[in-house]
Amino acid sequence: MADAYIVAAKRTAGGRRGGALAEWHPGDLGAQVLNALIDTTGVDPAAIEDVIMGCVSQAGEQAQQIGRTAVLASRLPQSVPAVTIDRQCGSSQQSLQFAAQAVMSGTQDLVIAAGVESMTRCPMGINARAGKLFEVPTDPTPASVKEKYGIKHFSQFVGAEMIAKKHGHTKEQLDAFSVESHKRGAAATQAGLFADEIVAIKGRDAEGNEVMHDKDEGIRYDASMEGMAKLKILMDDGIMTAANASQICDGASGVLVASEAAIKAHGLTPLARIHNLTVTAGDPVIMLEEPLFATDRALQRAGMKIDDIDLYEVNEAFAPVPLAWLKHLGADPSKLNVNGGAIALGHPLGASGTKLMTTLVHALRARGKKYGLQTMCEGGGIANVTIIEAL
Image (cartoon, rainbow, N blue to C red; front, side):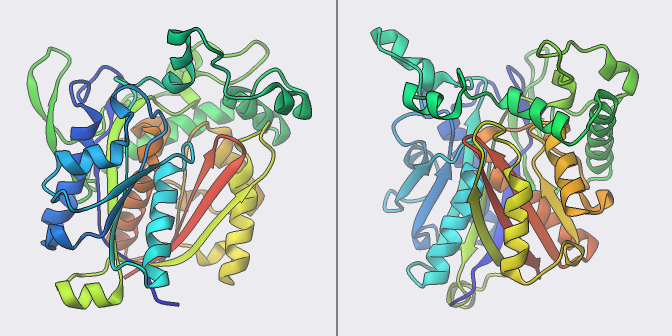
């Protein structure tokens, strides 16, 4: 089977809900990343054979095939096709895996995998609520499934609490993890470690002035345990707060995946080789725990051990998820989310997959490391794992 390579990886800086990126139509936001991938590589835009875009809230301005909208808003020619996919929070990670599979199969040579989510303009759950406009049922889960699992509804918040309880996490542990995420994000930003991966675009500051948005807006540079302790518990008898959960975020991201033939034909420089692609599914009630078991399978299939991996990106949907992952794998915390995670940098749902991959690729190369692993918990109890080899 042929190899697939990442030859460019870019993302916007995260924008807080109602913040710097609030005025951007998601189609235009996604287009900025598509343009940046072309500008970075100098590849002929007409040579791109497909754009696979992840997006979760496919309603409102993100309806009607946002991937195609982004292509039409970009400098790519109209001859470039696109498709939009939804694997919940792993949507653009799955975009990458589909793109890699296309290249590895020999079907295509140059494919962009990307993601976009404006959580300001298309709030989470907007597609499930749309039926209220027409006075039709809006619950996406049929009674048969609820009865099968003995629940009233599926909830990521319940799942996070279940993981914390199962793995013995305390609120203090969750808050400490969150503080560390902010500290790492702040340190990376101040050291300029995101400079090569971020696409700087125009935004608005808190006073409404036009600014160049090139830094993740959600980082709390003064994060402390005392500050975390003041936030309200989200559920009765729970330990989760907004402080130890990912931040609502606007953003876009993408990577350009190429075959060896395309690299030679277009004079491209490979940044990383796709080493393993895995997706698994498990318990939809606890929902967010599947990255643990998906990673087990990915490592087994790759013939690797966790100690062979130099850096990990595990999405910080909620602090219990990466903490449980570390415990289950016996992994080294110093290798995890080394530049901060979604608790500090934001989680723009459908854009988070290629966002994390972008950060992983650049972090591996900046540190002279070899193997990186990315995994994401996803609604429905699904998880993707992607292992790459930096070049």
